[in-house]
Amino acid sequence: MNYFLIIFSYLLGSVPTGLILARGAGVDIRQHGSGNIGATNVGRTLGRIWGGITLFGDAAKAMAPMLLVGWYLKGSKDAQIWMALAGAAAFLGHLFPIYLGFKGGKGVATALGVFLILSPLALMANILLFILVVWRSGYVSLGSIMAAAIMPLGVWLETSSLALTTITAFMSTLIWIKHQDNIRRLLNHKEKGWRKK
Image 1 (cartoon, rainbow, N blue to C red):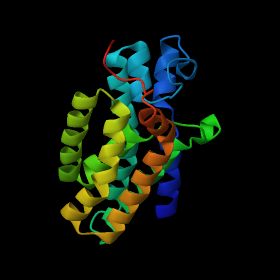
Image 2: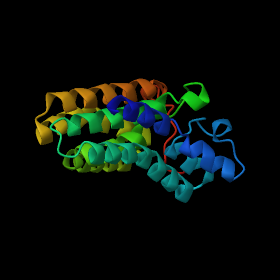
Image 3: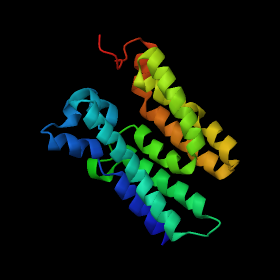
């Protein structure tokens, strides 16, 4: 049953929230802006309200299966690990969705949902770092990769769990890999900032 829940988590994570919302507004988000299906591109293309709804949806599709696993395994000593694995599976679904030929988003919003349940104190610290970096630089991508870089440390300090920290490090590494084009543009001073010129 546990493995079925992990598969379910992946399939739910594969649901392309931004693509569905944008299509409801008559737009194929993959043909606009960066072409990404995540909240940042939806926000740039359709406005911040739509971007916020996408952010919520992408976070919720990780939180929902984690809460389901937590309810199903309530009282089990392994419940937290299985919840983390369910969150990671939903995260993988967002990055590599089966419904879109495994071409998905960058995972930041879905990771936010995972850590809101898994390690909320570390997440709050990361959100503050993200806001500070974006405010000073104007680059959402820079804030995302900086927050991802320190998240494993935050999880370790909050939980002292090697297993949870390892899962976090795996997710953080994938966020960096999915942001490789952004990193290249940042290094070449060609990244598009959030601020209007």
